[in-house]
Amino acid sequence: MIENYATNQPLNYSTQLQYLNALNKIPGVGSQKIKILLDFFGESEKIWRATPTELKTSGIGEKLVEKIFSCRTSINPEVEWEKIMRYNIRIITLKDNDYPKLLKEIHNPPYLLYARGQLSALTYPMISIVGSRKYTSYGSQVASALAKDLINAGFTVVSGMAIGIDTLAHRATLDAGGKTIAILGSSIDDPHIYPRINFNLSQEIITNGCLLSDYPVETPALATNFPARNRIIA
Image 1 (cartoon, one colour):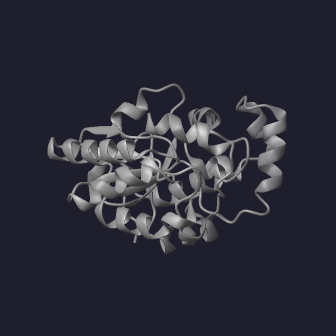
Image 2: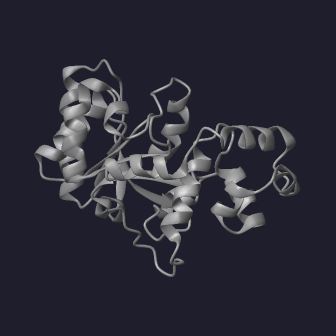
């Protein structure tokens, strides 16, 4: 069962998350558009059920209105929510207390984050370690040693779970008993975790840290996803 730990939320909060998630599945409905729509309609369910005329009045543009209206016929919010629950994914919104404070300060932060694992990892001071997929023995030694020193100093180590230095940083952190967060350029449901060679590592991270993404369930690891992913790591 997915729970919401943010305070002062309405009783129908999980329902509103369902519709936010469904909206997030529509191409072109990003963080800025969600904010505009919520400011206008107040609730995500009202956005989902709005007529084309009402959507146009919100000011999001006619093309996006057409996109929303056409995509709604093929997206079932309840079915999509079942997928979220199947993998014990937690949705964190920009308004929730669990949303990383530093991430709120960037330009256009993701309105929704999808998380699996120990959300307590998000409460510690964080520092990212990233590097080349092809690394030297020196690079391997430095990444591993640095990760261990950082967790001993009370940091959560953040990386992208890519092959190479990212993997070494996660592995060294886990081996030393620390918490680590992997930010993916895909969704975090099991079939879409990327790279596949690190699937077992991802399951260890869920147990001892957190997987995080701003991509909804069933999003593949497209090349265009990674620059946007990197802003979250940073």
